[in-house]
Amino acid sequence: MMLKDKTAIITGAASPRGIGKATARRFAAQGCRVAIFDLDEEAAMNAARDIGPEHIGVVCDVRDPAFCRKAVGDVMARFGHVDILINNAGISQPDRLMDITQENFDLVIDSSLRGSLNMAQASVPSMIDRRTGAIVSIGSIAAQIGGGIFGGPHYSAAKGGIHSLTKSMARELAQHNIRVNAIAPGTIDTDIFGDKLTEDKRRDIVVNIPLGRLGTADDIAKACLFLVSDLSDYVTGLILDVNGGRFMH
Image (cartoon, rainbow, N blue to C red):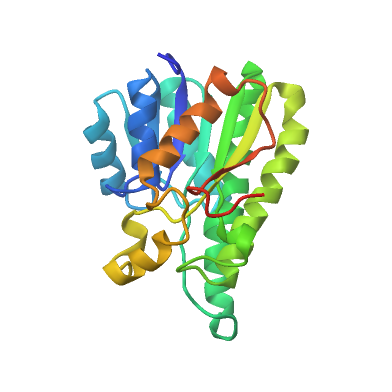
């Protein structure tokens, strides 16, 4: 039980085939109490029930700092403390450069980058009090190769910001024994693609992946588990590539 008696918050974790839900399952199997945060309160509560009765679903809009503080407060009231934060919430839009509106730019940046900051600011005080904590944010290969399969420039910018924010937080919070890392997934087969990932598109993508397959949500969940457990207790400020070898550096 690598996470026995720990409490984890995972944002954007209600989607049945998503990274957040897979991570929640992995954490729960290791003895962790999980709070699933999502914009959809009913979906968050259902996802928590799917994992087990000791877990909770909490409605939260990560774009709103006050909402984040309230939601984290709800977790504190139930479990007493926060040990782990997984910043997974975010959206992807395929807009090309000249098609990005200010509204869509703000939406993508706020959901991923600003949301990660808001959740860290809400969760870190509990970690500082206990002198222990682990934060993992979900970045993207899109920030490393100049774009994603279905993500526009604003998506790449948001994920690049997460990578930089991760390193800055890691340096600042190390004095409190709080480790901060990020994961840069490659193309992961989740619900985020909807019906856009046709068989032809899938084949075109896999050709460029040395391991010969798309990633799964559980591939990322296992990386999250590593980064929040004692297996990585001397690791901070890392952007961990989980992309099947598609991008090597």
